[in-house]
Image (cartoon, rainbow, N blue to C red; front, side, top):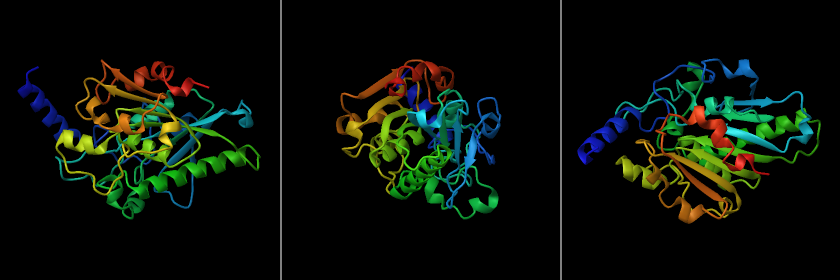
Length: 294
């Protein structure tokens, strides 16, 4: 491929997809798995709270003793519906294809949770009261990180109730797809109970990513590449696709220099673009990440 051809392909990807993690706009009010089945039909239970801007689902193995669960693996969805060109955001950030939910559906762990991003999967009435900054310039803001942490705390409280325990000590694994990986990294940097962080096709240095794609900086957002002492203590596995024009491997930027350690793994999948074959390869990929380490 010549430089001109590559440049044309990149501009097409930017026009149709950035900053999306899905293919089309959607009005779904619940994430679905890769077969189009609502995840509430395959064992995931919706967790309600006082702030339901983030849709949260939990799946536990009823045949296992909850007290014996060593970890809670939380999957975080990507950015959502596509923009119109580079400057017009969607009116509804809900993804048509929930890659985060697809990945969660492939996981056979005893305790799994799924977090949508703020304002996704809301009905029209609730969406009208959800600030658009949560899926535009402020999608990785401190406020969004706080909302996500509150959703995780509700999950832990729910597990504590289910376990009939006054104290529930649980390691958290975070898995984030695309923009969900950037958010998962920000969440990990703000918590002390994260054991393992895995990202798929995630812009881990948002400054480098926006410069690479020649789009406006995310001035209202935090940058996952900002140095964090917490991240230096966490086992990390970050995956990129060689054929990914939306979040290419160069989107790693300064992340590894600032937040990488001997426990950090960077993997480049030669066959992958932004959307495929992450779901199909997920069980195999999981076995190569810190999700399978003690």
